[in-house]
Length: 280
Image 1 (tube, rainbow, N blue to C red):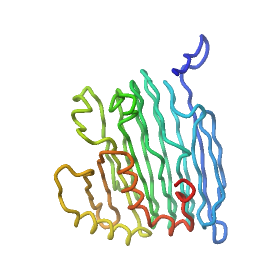
Image 2: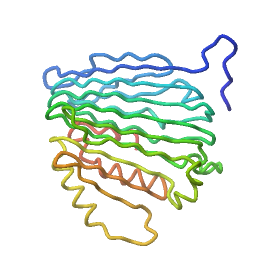
Image 3: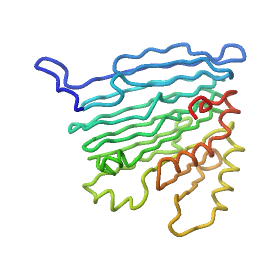
Image 4: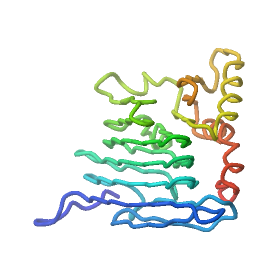
């Protein structure tokens, strides 16, 4: 059902800002600040590990035309935090567009894992996002970004109007990643350009806490055989000695999520608990 347009005198857009701050308290990390303005919500469930967890969601179950969400995150020195979403990031038909911004600072020897559920753009959606992360010396980052073809079962395969994602990660003023990729039918029909693939993902691993995981994944990807009509196409790009950027295009979301969860199978060990155990 298409959301009703605001009446005269009402704001045409919903602007939601949320702030999260994590800090070390003895052997564990705790949530020091969790403040959200509608339509954003924050959930901070307990877990059995040493890291603190937070999940975002939005009232109405998705983004409607004109929404602009901003999430500001601070992970203090030595802290470990998981940031995820309560469900898929649904973007409804939005002629004027919607956007979402993540701005995070990760302190010295701290860890941030940003592993949201996939973004699903409905037919007629316009969406852009920015992921901007600043790392202190010794900080580590796990970041996943997944986008799907949309509601293919309803005939809405790659039927959105615009999708743009910018990723900026810097350490001590030096850019490790600064890129933007765009999916827009103005550049050519998306179903034809994407071919048989229905889901795309980028997974970024940066920092000393992930050194062994990066090495193992880089070796695995390098050893993959090249097969015609493969169900997924995978690449790995080293970022100096401190990072690894993995990408995958898959014929289905299920195939892609199986691969990315396998890549991130080390995460429960870093967090002290499994964030996916209750979602299987």
